[in-house]
Length: 107
Image 1: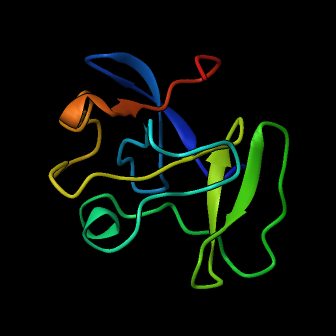
Image 2: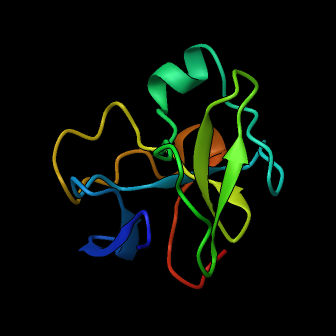
């Protein structure tokens, strides 16, 4: 089962978590590596993987420095944004010039 679903927003189809919250990628990450920790991870919570989760298709797992595991799409770790308050919000797109909505097929 994929860790995210596709949802229509004002920016078109984007990936969202199980609660409908938009997922984002971070330009400072590298494929298979998250660089969002501390305050960054407080504001941009990683989409964490349940224990025993398995990679599937374009979805893979990234190990964080604390030993936990998060999800990545096409190798890029994905996050939610603390300032999105309801499903379909896309207020994190473009923040700091380094955060972007995660879109199917656009990575």
